[in-house]
Amino acid sequence: MQPPFAQRAQSEIQKDFAAEAGRPVSDFTLLGGDIRGTDAPGMSPTDLATVRAEATILFHLAAIYDLAVAQTLALSVNLDGTHNVNAFARSLPALAHYHYVSTCYVAGKRTGRILERELRHEAGFRNCTRRRSTWRNWKSRR
Image (tube, rainbow, N blue to C red; front, side, top):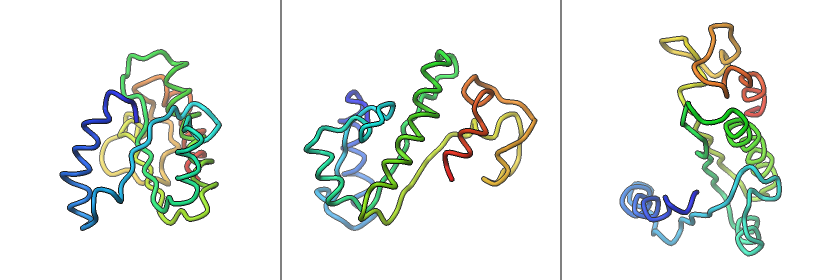
């Protein structure tokens, strides 16, 4: 999570997640980092040791949603970053649940119900990340 969003994220954990799960807020930990880095997505050595020892659930929601962002940045975060988080998730020995939340943009210019197995298509896309990298992105989720 990016530092400017830490306070809001902590508030939402207290208000929504902990209450919904019936768990104390202390059971949830927010960690900052940069998913573009291949070394444990930018975590400090202390955070990395804690995650490796304790993490059972991982949520990956990191992405750049700005459609006007430079293509190089969009690809490094949305594509390469997801690849890095996927690799990191595979390295966690106690991981039981990995939740990856993507955007609606992966559907491209299609409308209606679109299943995950239908991500490869020729309908076109609305942004540089998807136009250039849909197949790689779909492949990174497997």
